[in-house]
Image (cartoon, rainbow, N blue to C red; front, side):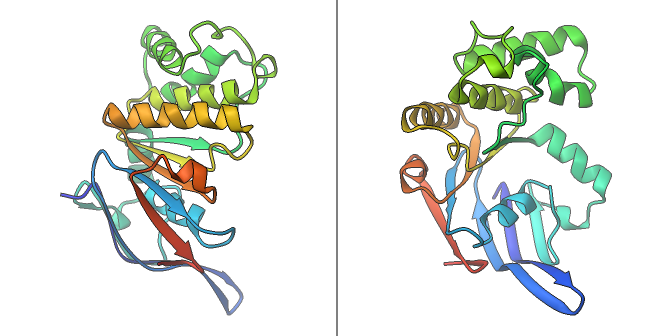
Length: 221
């Protein structure tokens, strides 16, 4: 059984009567435990496809099945619940709150999941140690390097034990050494059983994935 299955999924945006197709007729199956890179030039539809699969957006047409359930018929509350319990996100920009420590930034998803304070602290500490930042828990973002900030973002994505981690250009703001360290973390997480779906235009970053999906003008090639 596929973890994710898209059947003829399309996403269009409208300005008056003008239709812009961001994703067209996407058919795709992803199994649990895969490490996939979605590649393509800027404007090819990579992030739109990721947003649909990550329940941040809904398709204009087509069907999306997650764990064999047709989620295209789910309401927003149901999609939000899946996002919170099944999915972790890592983005190019780290989106850390500047006045909060690394530890407190990592706790944020658990607040929305109604996790008790003591459990939040336990999970956040474990996640930061998992990404090699056990010694930086009390530091604020301006006291961390770019690579360390992205590690905090990965730790934050791990706290609710998601089935899938979506990473949108996670090395885009990093130097080559930091980028390699971040990709090694994703590689390790995949070996531990996490499904990783990575959006990138960089071939070096994509080389860590076990399968590559290429998009051009909204179409899977």
